[in-house]
Length: 134
Image (cartoon, rainbow, N blue to C red):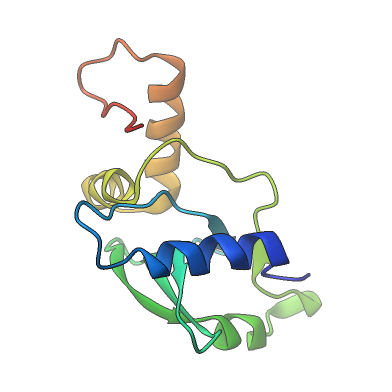
């Protein structure tokens, strides 16, 4: 699977170009995942080296963190049954990275955060859930 299409790469680079701007809090552009485990990554930016991504990383250990990760390293991972890291082709979100990070830290995983944020999209009246940022 191609992990970055040209439109995704362009969106990640555009977000990186705005990095120094006031109130820079982009929405995740792409979601990667381990099809055999809980590891999940949400990327918002791609550095000029074409390899270093920035976003929210969750290796399935209960402590999602903001940081940088390597596209080449993800692409080189070989899992059992000939599988590798996949891109969620259906991923899209109205939530900014700060909301994802807060919710993932609160729940202990990006996967649980995704469940809560989907519920929030459906039921915007729940005061316990964050509201989407324009």
